[in-house]
Length: 180
Image (tube, rainbow, N blue to C red):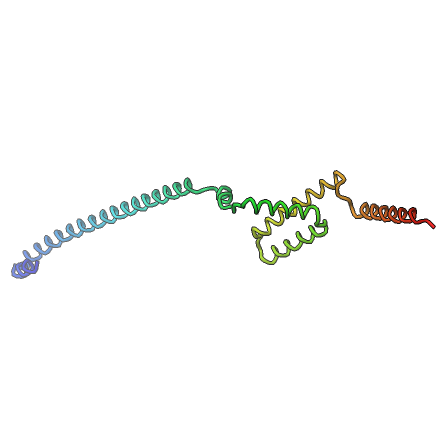
């Protein structure tokens, strides 16, 4: 190119202008071709990137679908992770619930539930231990309700009446045996 310009400089002015215009046209065409090539390259890159993005999205979607297929529902996970109790533990638990049923007053059950409520309020969650205790309290309440309905469990008034009657019988029996 430098040699070409040196050759043009040696030409007479009219020929030099014609050659420079010719060279200018030639360069404009080369620039247009280069610009067109750049534009096409950019379009190709954009298409490739778009296709690559679409392929990546499809791959991600397929992976997520596979994960969902492999995921175990929460309920099943909880059942699988539920602690397995030994027969001794099961028996001890039955004894505990029986104790709650027979030897714990309704007021004691209320106080236990109230303590759990306070614990949950403080901690902000219900622990597995407290969940178990609530179930036990609920079961003991159900038993007490059944016992009341069937007459096995007496209300405070009935219990006091029975104790007064039993006390009177004892007193009468003692007086009857040892009359003066």
